[in-house]
Length: 108
Ligand SMILES: [Zn+2]
Image (tube, rainbow, N blue to C red; front, side, top):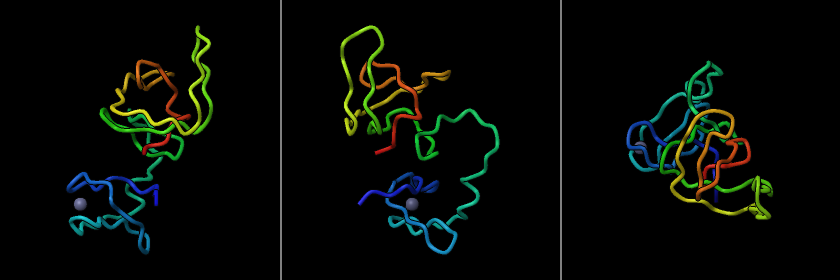
């Protein structure tokens, strides 16, 4: 089962769930308020289609077909790309050698 919950700020593992307005880490039991991670404040973080912050080394899944600019390649929805790099800017994510918009990606 996939979830949209963020990684645990304590142990950085991703097995977390939402419980009564708080995120709870299934691994270390750490709890933190859900609002804390949903602040719309301006920051530099690159967020995926679900608003989840991405980080270098994350694995992402495409949420739509993406035509690669300047080639006949189309990356299919559901394609999993490991070990992304954040570059900033409009096409903020380098994934598998392609520069992609974070909006079209979902953290796996
Ligand atoms: Zn944890």
